[in-house]
Length: 254
Length: 132
Image (cartoon, chains in turn yellow, red):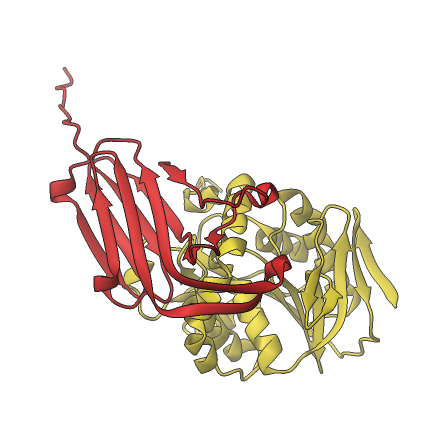
């Protein structure tokens, strides 16, 4: 067991020796529509990624998760070849978001990551009328922004982003770590497996994970049902983080 | 936000206040989204496993909304949560006390992909004042 990166009380612990060459790091943290959690969880299952570590902190919720009778940490690290994934299956308090984002960016940098990808959602009021959610992209890298355009993904041109992915984007700029944000149109306050499927399809263009989303769509109702309480707690936390600022217009003076 | 009636809880389960289920009556509390607009209140309710609009019942008064919906199948968990006991759910129930009086006669509802959307026009009359 190796403590690899620690920041303001949040620590990433590697339980397995992680050997990866310029890995891509995927993040699935609680956010709008639980897109990241649903998408990354699906990728982990489909690729049969191996649990190689966890993230823990005194400021995380006082919980342990049981899977198949075995206790485990609610924020875990997975690996398959040069793909790493960080996945949280609990709501995270606003206080924990800053150190968690710092530790993830620091760890990705330490792993000499070629790309840190955040999968998330953009809450849209008319989601009920959208059959195929659009995915928006944003990056701190000019070449990635070119790729976003090349793949005909609308670039997030103006606006605010609030929450863990916002912090990771900001910290990645400072750390010179390529960061890609893919955000699908989503129900703001309901788990949205359809939007998670859209974000996986967009991810496939940048990182060929080649994950089929049919089974995700088929399990949609089960996911919506089981993720209700996590969604409610996440909505409460997002409100505390000032998530509503994403619906405001930024001051345009430069 | 409207006042929302929470799920009933067992007397011994005081720690479980705020849970979104009642395994005794097989009932789940749905996630809801509420918008207080200028002329109407809009409520969206997410009810996965409810397929037919015929299975959704909406009862309105001027200041309350009551929703009941039947799932298309019984959702069964062999070991529910820390209780580690079997739990079956087959319906949703939710009641709101509204922050403004509405006009039930002109209220509209639509149901798509397990989501119920209610448009409840406000009853209060508004008068525009000429700015001089």
